Length: 123
Image 1: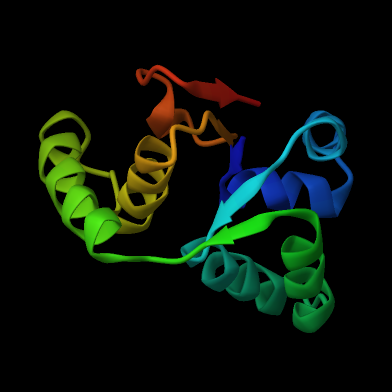
Image 2: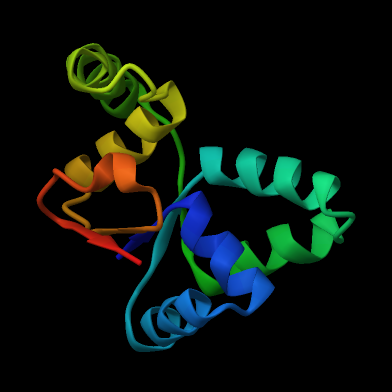
């Protein structure tokens, strides 16, 4: 399972949806696209939370997917196509979607921009 940024945030705030994330984390091999670390860092700074602690938790609880040429090219293609359907679709979402696609991982997210995609679980 590939956890996107919104799933991590729900986990860190301990919400009801975060309980599902916790269950997934402890029952599955989980992955995180490295771009989610930047997004979690941004969120943590806005919320005055400990960045280092949160990043360490992500690295301990999941495998980090680094960006490579295959992910970058696929992300560009996906971004081009997804923007036709949803003007709000962002490149970081494309990196996450490409990572999930290449590694054949289901994506766990709270982001409804993913709701029309297969292999996605919306929290």
